[in-house]
Length: 152
Image (cartoon, rainbow, N blue to C red; front, side, top):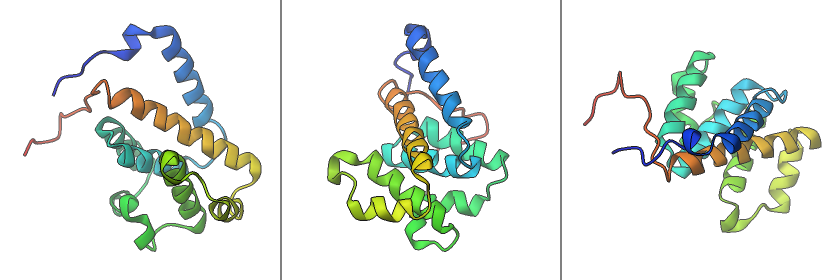
């Protein structure tokens, strides 16, 4: 697999704006651990190997357990996630797959039980941000680092 193009090099001005929004999301006040989980889950849904690799590595560096990272894909069946994390992961899935079913009133109400309205806006922007990165990395085939990985 070869990267199709270097999107930062081809459109530096807009990528500067994307990076600025990314920085704002990272500094928005939501828990760093929660941001890692939603970035990882959206990237799994979107099939973005670059972002799955990056966000799982960053989460581990920030103290996240291997077990929880492995189980993000099956969070509904795992007791390892708090109710707030579960609400964020459900919201992440619905917003990431918004064209399939939209976002139900029931999910909105369940999520508001764990997030203030301000936090829900921040969470939604964070989900939009990782989906933007996925939509750059997947079509342009961004390649994750492979120094420690072995091909099958």
